[in-house]
Image (cartoon, rainbow, N blue to C red):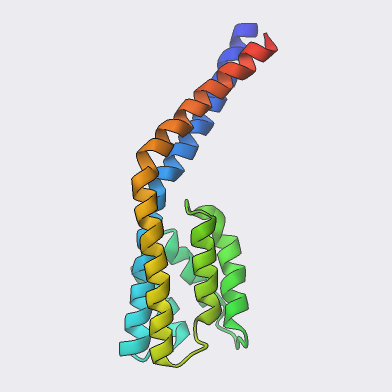
Length: 169
């Protein structure tokens, strides 16, 4: 009976480690999706003169999940919205658990959302470029550490299971 419990504990902790490792692997892809979203926002706002609602609608159609889901949720509100920054923050909070990005990306996107629609087109373009620069830095960091963190997460899952088994037995 003890062996069944030990195998169960080891299986659960190993799966948790592999799940965390998968999130590390997905992080660069999610950052790239947000970079694409910001570039599309820039193109549509600056060159296409589209409204924020039109931009969100187009992004929801053209981006892959989970980023498209964020813009779908924003686009569902479309009733008169006096504070787009609050809407952006609220939707970002709800959406955040469905992606693999970290706190630094959260801060970048939150800060960007606070400036979205608050400036003239030239200033807005500068804000987008600044956010893209920060996301480039985070993407490079994610790419540099993805293998190392994946191995560490998988190893920690297995080792923590073994530790719990040793402590119990």
